[in-house]
Amino acid sequence: MADKLQPQTRAIRGQMDQTQYREHSTPLFLTSSFTFDSAEEMAETFSGEREGIIYSRYSNPSVDELIAKACALEGTEAGFATASGMAAVFASLAALVQQGDHIVATRALFGSTHQLLTNLLPKWGVTFTYVEPDQPDTWAAAVQPNTVLFCTETPSNPGLKLVDLAAAGRLCKEHGLLFVVDNCFATPVLQRPAEFGADLITHSATKWMDGQGRVLGGLLLGNQAVMDKVVTFCRHTGPAMSPFNAWTISKSLETLHLRMDAHCRSALALAHWLGEQQAVAKVHYPFLESHPQYALARRQMDAGGGIVTFELKGGITAAQRLLNAVELCTRSSNLGDTRTILTHPATTTHSKLTPEERALVGISDGLVRMSVGLEAVVDIQGDLLRGL
Ligand SMILES: *Cc1c(COP(=O)(O)O)cnc(C)c1O
Image 1 (cartoon, rainbow, N blue to C red):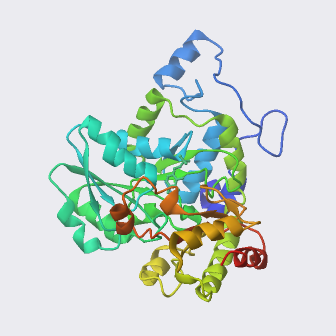
Image 2 (image 1 turned 120 degrees about the vertical axis):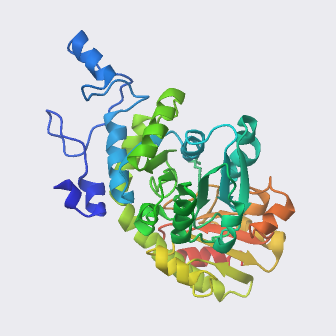
């Protein structure tokens, strides 16, 4: 029956089986290992002849519940949960490439993903080429004989450039590349890359999935063949998510649809309002008609997401003045919280990029990233006016 239910219902009702206590809300399995009735049962479980849970670095009931719900939301066959989003991103690449391989990636990736490609993977002889996210016609030219994987992120952080997932899916099919998507910004509520042929989807569950700024977490979700490799890699390298964090995020998924709906509605309203403010030079939001990829946004996303970025006419001084003036919104680098958060990328999350690199990914000195929370829109507006 469960397979026939809508994803949002499965995020609520896709709980693990009840224990003998017949609890309504699922319990937390804080245990590092599991026991066996006999030596034979233990041997059969280890060999894989018998299904069973062995050790929480491999699997755990609280973690498995989260994975099952996340697979239902993304429409994927299998998954693995990691301690953070970056553990998932690292595993998504490290499990699938080997020495001498080449990756094609869209520019404007999450900061630490950029570090992985530029500074860490080259240590093991893996190279990469950046392509422009909004120019799909140029991507094929970057594919080399040793290219094995195309990795992307859409909408991008913080420029909110979109990547045409259908075009990426076609490129990967044509050239036999693995197709890996970081779907953190959109969440499966708004965009499901598996529908466009993605083999592997990563998430920082720290963001909208937990949605309340409490725990770190990451997810790897994909087709069975790819996940077999990823799970083997993760079992032996140990990035497993803690059962406590999995239990917390699993509860959060029950309200993900509801929360994303509210985040997106407020974000769209604020994007329009910011466009009318004197101090604001430009607003970026996928569901604004002024977004250069508005038509693509409508094609591949169900709503514009919870992040709005805007450029202030006064550059760095104006951006810092705004961040210092707010009393309700929070200055923080996180996103995807019930609380509205402001970040100044040029001096924080993207300060390690050179000014030229920042320009290429559309991060001007006056750019402010706003992760729209669930407070009343009028209260957020009143707070922003203190500094605009
Ligand atoms: C935050 C984030 C990550 C990293 O996740 P952590 O949970 O902080 O490790 C990766 N990708 C994107 C798009 C993110 O926003």
